[in-house]
Length: 142
Image (cartoon, rainbow, N blue to C red):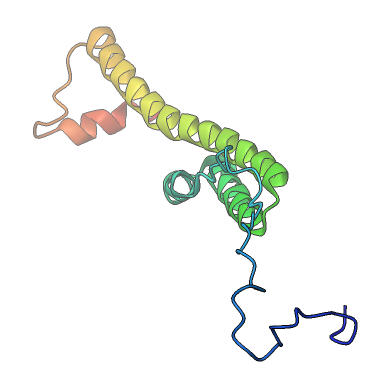
């Protein structure tokens, strides 16, 4: 609509202060997307911890990659792809944490079983005494 086709009231011109021509301001609604749904988690701190610890078979590194992808997609607004990357990061973190706990536990169990076996099969060994290290090394010599 241009100014030439608009008819102003007779007592009001565009540059005068005409209160009768003013209309009350309407409301504006801005749609911000689906605000009721929480954005997916990216598990970045958990992935960093798994990457810096044992990192068996690079599972922690894979979790870190998917965590960063999830964060990037969440920032770009692609929540569906962010959720997929978040799920992958979570499962890689679960696998990495399982291996990170399992390997030291297996080492401890094997050490305890070795000590129990050595103590029961060939008498008790004094591993901390004067000849302890030599006695221990004799067990592995053929």
